[in-house]
Image 1 (spheres, rainbow, N blue to C red):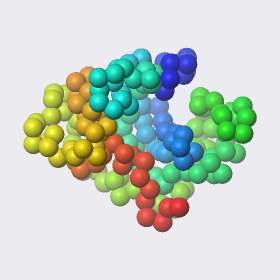
Image 2 (cartoon, rainbow, N blue to C red):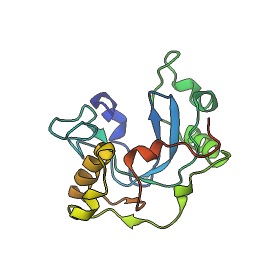
Image 3 (cartoon, one colour):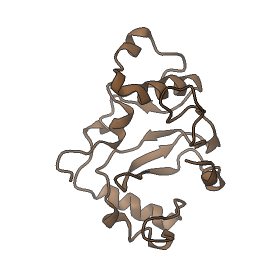
Length: 177
């Protein structure tokens, strides 16, 4: 997130439930767990096109997928976050315990979960990926390839499925709208 969000990102501890908000589709994605404390510039080049510029989103935390559920459209989560809305479109991201529990319940009760919840996962390497692994990342996976390289360099402790892309964290499951 942008630097202005660091005031609460710094309070994130490993194990805390995390939800990802997609600004473009206004959907909430989950369920993730923090695997690090919230810090600045864990990956100073995250979310950049080619890794040569510094990120505009320095407030960061490492995460792992707890359970990938069907994303929630705004009409489903808005009531839970009602007191966080500052106007029609903007809301504060910091959640209290009650809001977190309600969002977890909404995700858990959603009609579809991702097939990626399978337990077959490999740890993210603590060293640069092998050349044959890099070759599996197509040009369409550039953001993921960059993330993969940078995350492995900082010794990330989360896991990723064997054949996933970064964008797939936001994929809808069958039966989604």
